[in-house]
Length: 383
Image 1 (cartoon, rainbow, N blue to C red):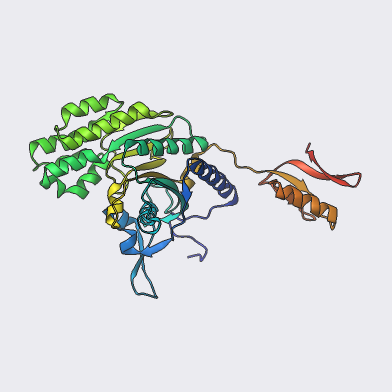
Image 2 (cartoon, rainbow, N blue to C red; image 1 turned 45 degrees about the horizontal axis):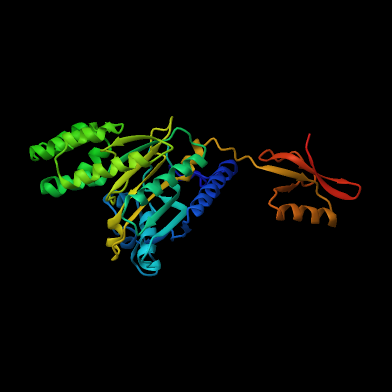
């Protein structure tokens, strides 16, 4: 085997892709800052029990484990940054009011999420803590739609779900709760035969409700259908009311209800949402409310947020990241060095062509050139 081969579903990011990823990263982080979100940078690895606190079985399976040679304890390489940011809010910042945090960094998965997906994603996202009302859910969903718009993704479809529906069914029927992980998996995959098998011995009311969830998909009219087909439990009624409120408030996307869209980690406690665009089978961004994660860290804290894989978004984004640059000659000339430095300080990309390599710069769009006119260096439009 060649020593330079990389593991399966692990790949280098080459200049053209890296430039596009960085352009999108800056756009999105600037937008987060415009909403008041503060940047945090959690570590790539932590003690495993801290990294997985409050998370579900799915996250555990996706997490790489290794032994710390200093302490002898098991470490985990993060597969999702959301629990880390929740830890920062709960233990390090310890604020009482609303806190808005954002992040961008690499995460590693033991297995790819899809056939051609990478196991090393660049996760970027935003989280809001300290407000349990739907206003926070609405803000985070609008921020996600803004981010996708800045990435040039048009005709976004937003699928809404609510963890409270399944939670209410589990609370009312302990036998169903005992099958929790398997039911989550079957519902998230819309595996109707598996769902029928799992629910065969449950109480008829619970069985029928669980089997109805995959078909409760469509426009806002699904909410009224759900009220007639699902048990009249208080938790279900509250969940459907939450979704009805958001449907009436969210703008900038096609809205759909999908009461079986339970993909992602099993730490959600309220409204969940997934964003889809034409031509891409999987969600390009996901998020939701996860109030119970803060409690797992010893401090109950209302929380909601979203994240996306910047590498995947860059792959499908029409944003043009080919840099506009100024081409300058190479000379031992103090005036030239001063002119180049001034342009770079002003934010311009200036590339000096090394002798003999004037045509080796295909990655950049040289629309201007630095030329000497009557002893002064001037920027002129390139023919």
